[in-house]
Length: 117
Figure 1 (cartoon, rainbow, N blue to C red):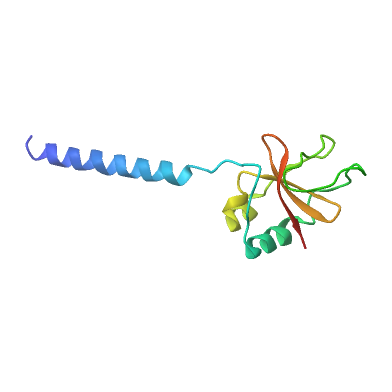
Figure 2: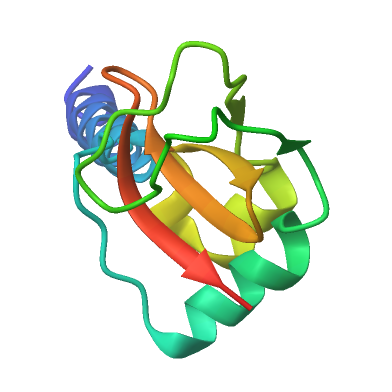
């Protein structure tokens, strides 16, 4: 019985460490109303997304960071391949309007970033 106690304790500690590491890896950042991407990240996002989800916006709509996306525009989640290449994009949605890639906070439909080619 004395030999089993240290083994059981070691197994419990190992399991706790693996669980904590797994939870930390699964934690995702949440979207906000502002996003800063490097030039390289912007180029990757543009290359992967600008031809997808193209839409026509109301003529009065001016796409800029901090502006709400009109309810008539359909925003879509950033595809997993793009989110893997640019992890900061994972919690966001996007749309392409008037030659601009809009990165949108899905919780309040506010534009977090505007990327142009």
